[in-house]
Every structure is written in C-alpha cells, then in structure tokens.
Length: 161
Image (cartoon, rainbow, N blue to C red; front, side, top):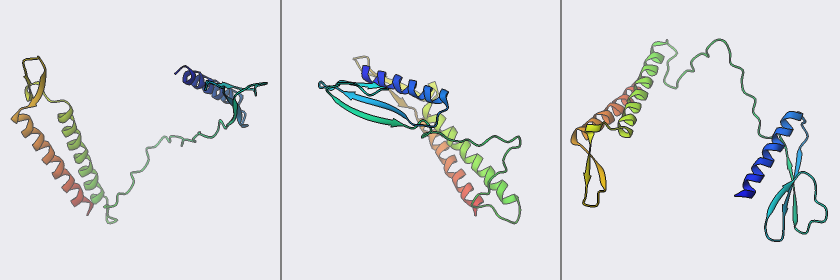
C-alpha cells in the first residue's frame, strides 16, 4: 500500500510538472524492482542497481480532451426517430410521453428505495434481529407505480409511431 501511495504521488508530481511546463515531450520514469520485489520509481536512471529497471515513457497529452465551448443559445432539440416531418405536433407528443415515462420511473424508483414508515413493518425474533416486511398497502402502491410505468412506455411507443 505504501508503494502504491508513493507511485500515485510520484505520478501526480510528474503530471503537474508536465502541465506547468507545457512541454509536449514525453516524460520518462524508471520503475526499479529490487531482489526482494520492492518497487520504487525514479525520474533518473539508476547507477549500479542490482534489480530490474523498467523505463516508462509517459505522454502527458495522451489522455486529454477538447471540450466544446458552450454557446449563449440553447441547442436545438434533436429529432427523435418517431418524429414526423409534417409538423412539430408529433415531436411534442413524443417529448411529453418521454417526460411522463421519466417521471413514472423516478416515482417507482423513489418508492422502492424510500418506503414510508407505515409501509414496512419490522418483524423480529428472540435474538433481537429484525427484518423489514412490506405491508400489503406498500405492495399495492408499487404495483400501481409499475403499472404507470408500463402505460407510459405504451404511450411513448404510440407517440413514436
């Protein structure tokens, strides 16, 4: 674990040096493995080292990304597969159905992850361990939310046609 932390800090230092220098050239590290398997890292090649030396060339620009600049205007909505060229009415229906489906899924997930206090009973044993048991009302509420998700999915499929 100590060697891993040393490696991470060394790589961070190399990355910071590369970033500050703005140099596009690759950085070189040397991984040193001694007879006992101990691993250390160096920025310069060792002299009279009895273990294994592995040269590591690191390109500081290898994992960079160029992000698009945000525009002042919001981007135009993309056309969906089910939108029609005859007008925006079909697109509005698809958008509304998609939003309804998202809301139904979110409500179901929220109910599954956060049952109300009266929807779960605690059943225990003599040892003091208790386990949650969903009430019938909670199961009915989940069934109704699952049904709402199914209906929203059907509405979305119909709107995309």
